Image (tube, rainbow, N blue to C red; front, top):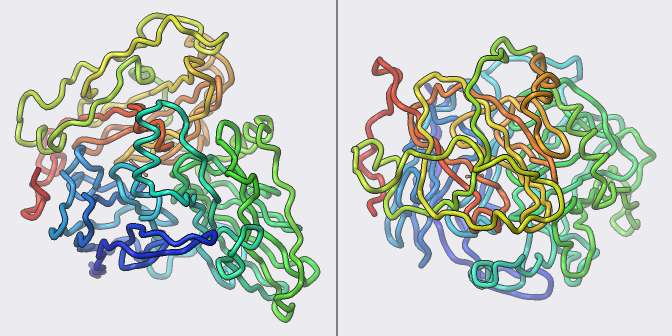
Amino acid sequence: AALKKYNFNIQVKNVSRLCNAKPIVTVNGMFPGPSIYVREGHQVLVNVTNHAQYNMSIHWHGLKQFRNAWADGPAYITQCPIKNGHSYVHNFTVTGQRGTLWWHAHILWLRATVYGAIVIMPKEGTPSPFPFPQPHQETNIILGEWWNQDVKTIVTQANKLGLPPQPSNAHTINGKPGPLFPCSEKHTFAMEVEFGKTYLLRIINAALNDELFFAIAGHSMTVVEIDAVYTKPFTTKAILIVPGQTTNVLVKADQSPNCYFMAARPFMDAPITVDNKPVTAILQYEGIPNSVLPILPQLPASNDTKFAMSYNSKLKRINPCPTCQNGTQVVASLNNITFVMPKIGLLQAHYFDISGVFRTDFPDKPLAPFNYTGAPLTANLGTTMGTRLSKLPFNSTVELVLQDTNLLSAESHPFHLHGFNFLAVGSGIGNFDPKKDPAKFNLVDPPERNTVGVPTGGWTAIRFRADNPGVWFMHCHLELHTTWGLKMAFVVKNGKSAEESVLPPPKDLPPC
Ligand code: C2O
């Protein structure tokens, strides 16, 4: 297999945005960080060397890392952090996946500035399954957030007050807020298009806390892939993308040659940015001067749940899935356990059988049936702290119902599972009804992905096959909620044969 090598040097750099300069953590001094371009089947070595005074760890979001959780990256789950002056080589082979994924820091809130795209091209000569012409060009569009304050201060604030921290000062597209913000003309992402040509946009939501709508003035988008899985193509004026997700769209430059804004704005619970302006970038037709004022797109209103539900219901696997059958084990949401980060990596504790690091008695049912989505409940606010994992036999099929509750306020949650893709078989508003709702599951062509939104005051059901032995983190991809403990992990036991067992740990695994 071809070998691709990357060096990731973690270093602090002064970067200025919104008329302020501040030191931020970067990879190779870049913000956003470097993109990784590989082909399916490539072996990838990323040597991460930490030159910063922050503990670091990098996660390859959406890569399945078969038997190889050692390369996955979340701090204290599959490894301890890489300390200042140390390095760790993430060694993995990309198998059975192609499309857009991304990488990001997986410790505290450092992913605020430490993230980049992973583009996996199909094996040489593999055509795309769509009846569309090959795109003329492709562009990565990474949505993020920018705070004028140091992120460390923001985390401390979030932890201390237990209240939403200050919203970000701006959202960003490829690290840039766009010309509606002060001092930002220079910090505007622009892509030039030729009339009549088709472009592939690889859109990534790397924001810390905000689910986002994204649209391009005048142009519709054809969604062809989500989370590196092909979907049945459909055309839409706007997309909804929650933190952690990726969406590939085709855009045809078929409008009157002009300058058009692309823009993003939060959906729902997200606090709007401090001055309530959308991030913008420019789609500029060839030959149109820079001075032309771009046209703004119409984005769905921030509380447009109807749009969100209808958008999500259009996402479907391109091929019917053979394994969507019934007959599964049901476990429910996080069930009153507030996850406590361990002192050493859970994967190590599992692999070397070190006792006392975690328990495997994660409760597989909610405490008691109650009305999750009625008036805000106070009765069930007492959670138990613990590092409690759920143990899964190798190759078992798992069904998970993620139920949002109204305990503090109804909020939507982008849930991400490491190590797997899952099938998002159902979703609804209100309380999940185990008697009635499964009848409505899509067991024909449910979208396959690694991050899914659990709607505000509603539920989402997912299924996956536990065919990847190791320890795999699952958490809300809103950093604020992860910090508060909205996370847990699965231990998938080894199968019978060596090919069904966790690989031995690499020698340079960062020690605790
Ligand atoms: Cu993209 Cu556990 O994260």
